[in-house]
Image (cartoon, rainbow, N blue to C red; front, side):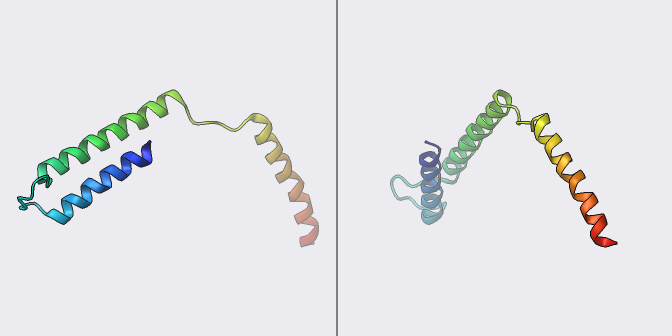
Length: 85
């Protein structure tokens, strides 16, 4: 769904850039139409992003994962000291 919306937006932007601001071709986007569409799309994306951040907080690593990483670091330190002697 997001890809389709993005493709629609890009099609509108391309159409706006190709036709330019002064074209009188039927169906051509005026500069204000293009800006309004882009602004609306960005607004929708921002609100969706805020929704996702609010509903799904960033995941934090488990305490077991942190402990295992610390243990691995402690195991590496003695080995490095022996090889440097």
